[in-house]
Amino acid sequence: MKQIIESLPFYEKLSSSEKELTASSAVIHRYEKGQMVHTCGQQCVGLVYVISGDLRLFLLSDEGREITLVHILDGQTCVLAASCVMSQITFHSELTAAKDTELLILPVPAFSKIMKENVYVRCQMYENSAKIFSDTMWVIQEILFHSIDRRVASFLIEEYEKTGSETLLITQENIAVEISTAREVVARMLKRFVTEGLIQNQRGKIILTDISALEEIAE
Image 1 (cartoon, helix red, strand yellow):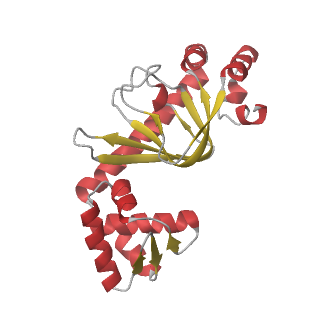
Image 2: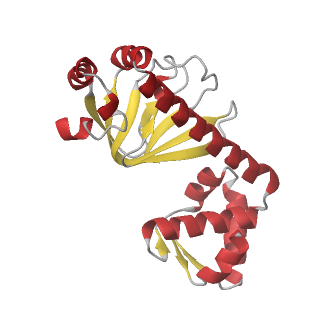
């Protein structure tokens, strides 16, 4: 636990009393894939630090459509689950475990006290919020201005670079959620990619057979 706490990006900038408060307040929680970590209307969770796993931050429309904004991975923090501490955060977002995930959570009372007293922590959390906002604007730009073939190809290449494998264990529904479109749209595009010899589409997985061509589409 001590080693994990010391991995927090702002730990070295904390005072002795703030380090003690963090150590006495922080808790570790484990979430299974698909389990909700934070949702609109729920009481603030606090500052979230990913020990291992993958958190997906997304918006949820009244009709139930999800728009994926960003993934928070190992060693990264997310301040949006503590939005009640930062009045400047006004949009509602959902946070769920994209796979089995272990989190260090600094609850709101401790996090709020440290935020008020430590200008370095406060600045770093605003930087965290600014990065998420930047990622959100990129997602909106992709949805509004880029064709579906580019978006699907970009996603497949990103997954290939992330996993290092040409075989991606992913479904059409997963892709649709990640690039914020309908499953039927993804299905049609994957069928086209199969016809062009770019991929093999099998149940529960996609095999990339022409990575160079996909990269050209993604550019």
